[in-house]
Image (cartoon, rainbow, N blue to C red):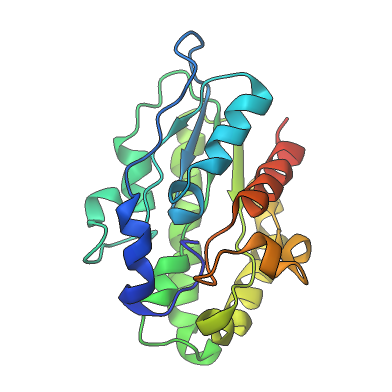
Length: 220
């Protein structure tokens, strides 16, 4: 996510191999939608490709694997943080933003797996997301969708408490911010072997299909 919540830089290495954002496939239509975020979007590119195919339109994507909401790490420079993905993006004609972020910030922070120890970080991430949403509104973005993180498996299971707190907060707070929150935890629960690849973090093709469908349900 962010990759969701992974254990250390070793789990991020796979993400880095495919860190370049996918290119939109339809050269005719002018995109009115952009994607920002981490390797949930960027590792395979399947969510992006599914959305383009289903909507029959071009979608810009700036998502990159290993990237944090804010700041940077050895695999993803702060230049490509989700905040800076938006700052550097061509926003001409864009009316819809689909994004995620924060998973890698938590994964790479020494506060994990303690929820209480991570509360200052979680509060800071939410303040930054709120500020980013306000920038989108100021730029005339009409529709904002946040793709939530499912609960990862394997070595990331110790982050379930943090992820559930974060997702529950978003479900309660984001509608009041005018953000459509896509909660995908129930869709993945009990189907992790089918929807999550062997690293315990990233979605399979089938999992990406589910995530794309959940986004499509949220789109106007």
